[in-house]
Image (cartoon, rainbow, N blue to C red):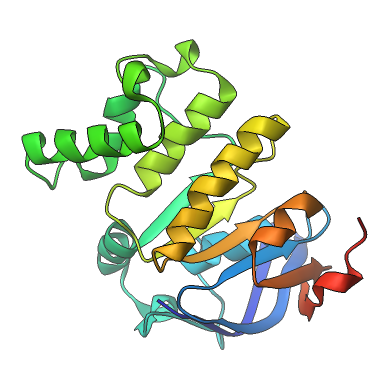
Length: 229
């Protein structure tokens, strides 16, 4: 799925204070591309991903189309369904439920909607693919950081989404585990998934085709040779 963003601004309000986080952001990502998004902490990277997913509503005058669907004007109920079917969101902090096993955490997004046996089979297949065959019944507290991230990726892939939104998913991982996760996501892109990947790690940039930089809410595309190291 392609991603088209036009004139996206986002302001957060607290009491009498306002802070403009995103300023007239406009860009396009073609279906099957991997685009990395860099920028200082607080520059608006996570806010951008949440707007793309419809987790944050856009302001007047903005438009976001994913695969032709108008995220900016889709009612909340239909937006949840679209997100469930077409978008996978991978968080840096995993966001796993501590009382559930790895397999149950993967199954949770589809628990109310899909046949239990079919859902369990899909979760097991994903965990096997991510080399967690022997960790399916472990709860998050029993898993390493890399294992928890793999569970989070399996959950994001549960419905075979066309678009993956990755919010620094390798930020808390050691180099070896990071490279394993990047390899998994690289395979996802080769399968045709569109990936928007927020990162502070310049070594990640070799995996993508394009680089966007956000500075004080303004997004610009930069060339790979401009990146040090």
